[in-house]
Amino acid sequence: MPLDHSQPAPRLIAISSGKGGVGKSSVTANVAVAMVEAGWRVGVVDADIYGPSIPGILGLPSRKPSMTPEGQIIPVEAHGIKVISMGLLTDDDSPAILRGPMVTKYLQSFVRQVDWGELDVLLLDLPPGTGDIQLTLAQAFPLTGAVVVSTPQDVSLKIARRGLRMMEQVKVPILGVIENMSGFTCPSCGTVTDIFHKGGGEAIAQEIGVPFLGKVPLDPAVVDCGDSGTPLIKAASGSPAASAYREIAAALIGQDAATTGIATPFRWTLSDGSGKPAPVAPRPDGPTETLAALDEEAASLHLLWADGQAQTLGARDLRIACPCAKCRDEMTGARLLDPDTVPLDIQITRIWSVGNYALGMAFSDGHDTGIYTLKSLRAMPSMEMEDV
Image (cartoon, rainbow, N blue to C red; front, side, top):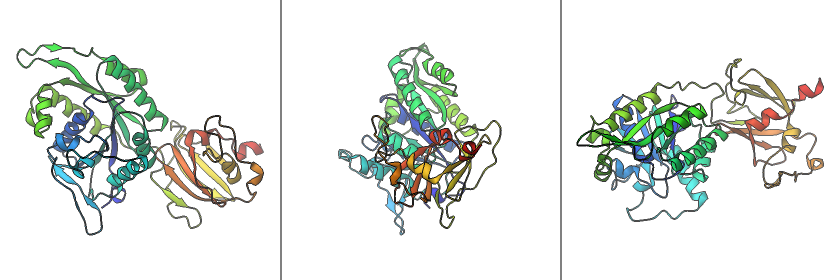
């Protein structure tokens, strides 16, 4: 079955890095194996469309996925992990020459059009950076959270901090920081040498207030394992690096996946009520930019936030406040939309979730390109407040 119909919904965890060369894919593959060892049902999406490496690390360079009669992609399996990757669809030396819209299409099909079956967790191995792919995944899917991988090197840590801030801006919870290549253990004498400094990943985690998931020491066997298609955790199960991977997997498995807001994704058609998200109970310590309930009445949108604050926004006010490029100048933020052209009786026709951080809205005048961040909605004056 497609991922969004599986019951219960699996955790979607993005494994990210600010820059390349930090061993993120090796961490993803080995943590996935550790989760399987712990009894979890695990899938991996190799979201690095241009430079896929998961198939090679897991020993799948020449195996092609097949299709179900319904047109769903059947993922390839290795070491108990279900995998989909561009590297499984193309030849070894064939580059993926794709523009942005096609990359987005592939990413969405890798999640939505794959017969994942029942999963406990789906790991998304992201390419380095903070660009289109990262934003597409944050907008299109209800990510449980993101893990940021860095080395202790100063330049890597600075870029990792940017990646953390990007995830925060799109309301993807940060599940933790992993410091990879954290010291080299001599295979002969056991002496640890800190090649890229020491403790930087832990310091960033403390600074930002997120969990530090652990340090993975640099092990020469990683190279051999990557070439042979056997993850290090399998080839050298008693090594310090393998132990670190298992501890990281245990920390992620043990984290509370409970949500404090309405479940996403959703697409609510107001005319018949289909797709309306079920409400959850707010609480005084709930997050201020997370929704607990949505309702609509008399051309007004009623919002109940997770901290218990209620808010009512008029459909016309929301249409005038549309932040899309047609309605506001992208550089200056100046309004391009003439409020006098917005009908007094305009209605909201559809509302849908955009990742964990925004709502999309369609109106009775046909406009449907606005993405309203939850932060901007919370900042709008409530009609009830104006009436007081």
